[in-house]
Image (cartoon, rainbow, N blue to C red):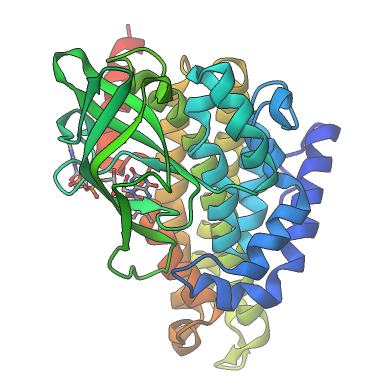
Amino acid sequence: MNVLARLPESYEAIRLEAETFANSLEAMSVEADASNDVHPGVLQAVRDSGLIRYTVPAEYGGAFEKVDPFAVCLIREELMKVCSHADSLFALQGIGSFAISVAGSSAMKDEWLPRVATGEVLAGLALTEPVAGSDLKSIVTTARQDGDSIVIDGHKSFISNAGAAGYYTVLAKEGDLGLSAFLVPADTPGLSTRPAPELIAPHVLGDVLLDSVTIPASSRIGEPGKGLAPVLATLAVFRISVAGAAVGLAQRALEEATRHARSREQFGRPLLRLGPVAGLLADSWADVASTRLLTYQAAQLAQEDPQRHLEHSSLAKLAATEACSRVVDRCVQVMGRWGLIHDSRIERCYRQARAMRIYEGASEVLRLGIARELGSEVS
Ligand SMILES: Cc1cc2nc3c(=O)[nH]c(=O)nc-3n(C[C@H](O)[C@H](O)[C@H](O)COP(=O)(O)OP(=O)(O)OC[C@H]3O[C@@H](n4cnc5c(N)ncnc54)[C@H](O)[C@@H]3O)c2cc1C
């Protein structure tokens, strides 16, 4: 099914490594994907796989000199075909640590990144608040300098790995300076977590409450008031990987529906040969194949300069996540009543696809940036 997207040899080796590992999770994935807490078996397996090293720079135990968006993308595609819980554990190590990789102090990198690379410490990125979602500039969590310390007060909500992470990268408003980013260890007095409401597709998610949390001023990531820059750098590298995950999920759904349509007969022939059903499957293959090519191309551009090509990553994320939702919906239709069975593979795909169009840039918000870019490109 992937014949159109041939990979350079070294990337095919990474893809194969991830595929072999992901397949080993098949049996555990039903339980893990139904869990709102970190699944110990999957966490240990992800740690042992060594794949997390693709989420941090080589100097701190990573695989490449700089985090490689194409490699991350391929790994997420394979993990998401089998286990969304493993995909999330893997991706969050990069999403929660990239700001430190690009803007953290040497001491901070030395202390935290090697442990992120092995999975000993889980990472979290705390941006969203009850009032601030897509509009990050509206966050109301505050940070104020008090001598050599920083005091943070606020409430972050819907934070992946909340309660499990060893630290959070927190974005807060620092007076008139603007938004600053801070590394806040999870065991800092005044920091507490509570579970988020359960989602249609379970996810390790919670709120992070910061009540006069006091950390050394050296915990600042980057310059005062310039905290949005490393966060945007994180998005530039990891947004494209959501597209990779969406391609993987869509392919898995299509494989399930195709097997079903090949073996089940109605009106004397396999569903696969009933015109409208064939159309659903063919359109889905077109969606998977075309968004995979777009995703790989955008990931390769991001390898060169992630921020300069952010709109291409947004384009791929938009196309792949929207296509993934269309594909899984068609696949449920192809499988008739079997598509509706709770916790069956196809029903899990159906639920897992939905959130991808909301996090790391909701589709409507991405469209605004993409249209702006289009306007500037057309002469
Ligand atoms: C599974 C999951 C994991 C998450 N993990 C994290 C995490 O680890 N860290 C973290 O900080 N956050 C996390 N989030 C939160 C996520 O980042 C937000 O849900 C996302 O930013 C969207 O914000 P919102 O949900 O408040 O929607 P809103 O911003 O309220 O948007 C609602 C709707 O309005 C549309 N909209 C908003 N603004 C515009 C506009 N200007 N023009 C047109 N349409 C617009 C949106 O596209 C959307 O359709 C997670 C969310 C989920 C579901």
